[in-house]
Image (tube, rainbow, N blue to C red; front, side, top):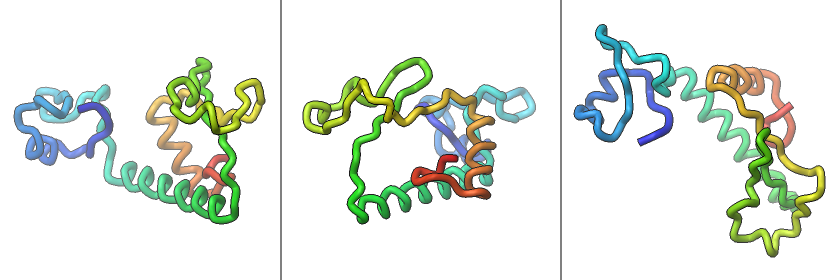
Length: 128
């Protein structure tokens, strides 16, 4: 299983003692390797709160009638439209400059940015 996990070796071992499903790597003294995508409880809570804020903001905009399409565009020009089943009816013009740009951050940079945005607020999607 790929993704994030709680930075608690005991929890990881209890969930998947064989290591077959959760790909966590440990040093000889039982600590996580730096390359393992493990987050502290504080980092997880920040991420959860940030996602909640985004959902609240998007929900409020939808209730106000704002439902415009604004797909993402990554730094390498990959977009949310590539495999979208609704691109024929959504009305988004790919030639427009109204893309939601998504930076290609390292995890540590993303956590710092989430922390900053939770403290300072941001635009309708939590960004500044």
